[in-house]
Image 1 (cartoon, rainbow, N blue to C red):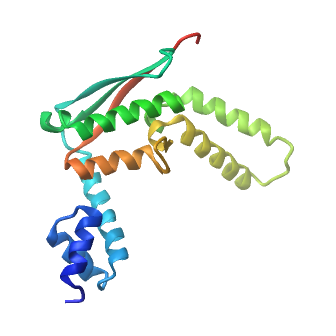
Image 2 (spheres, rainbow, N blue to C red; image 1 turned 180 degrees about the vertical axis):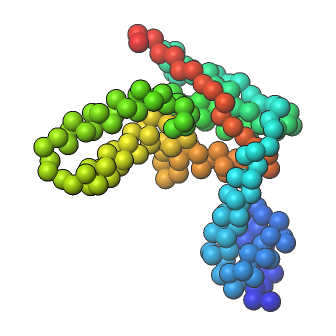
Amino acid sequence: MSYTMEQVKELRERTGAGVLDCKSALEATGGDTDKAVDFLRKKGIAQAEKKLERKMAAGLIDAYIHPGERLGVLIQVDCETDFVARNQEFRQFVHDVAMQIAAYDPLAISREEIPADVVNREKEIYQSQLTGSNKPPAVLEKIINGKLDKFYSEACLIEQPFVKNPDKRVGDFVKEQIVKFGENIKIRKFARFKLGV
């Protein structure tokens, strides 16, 4: 055994993981608590990704109205059980995502939902910006793909920096909720309303 029970206790407090998971993480990392935290986080995200295929029969519709009542968001987030849908932390999570939409005005939830004509228009703009740059085609393609990735990070909700913690993306925040609640969670749809637009 390359760890102490005190380390197991500390790891549980830091991650909320079970005793057996903490023990196996400490064994896998040779008793290094910081590495064990990363180990558990990676394991949790992997487990969250497995849950993405499960059926969702419950969820929540929430509204966020920005102070001044000139901007509002209506959002639907699905989950697997009514137990989670009624949970106050889940409700707060949904409200936080609605605030995100109000603040960052995404075009869609993910890349797949952005219409092809919008993507093609962006590519044409980037190509015209690079006309006459005398760079090889492979370099031009890399530059255009980089600019497209930047466009997606602004236009796609799950790729945007999270409004309450810009160091993580909204998609990471969703996966953390999947780990926390132990069931699949999906932002299904949203509508953003603004007066004068």
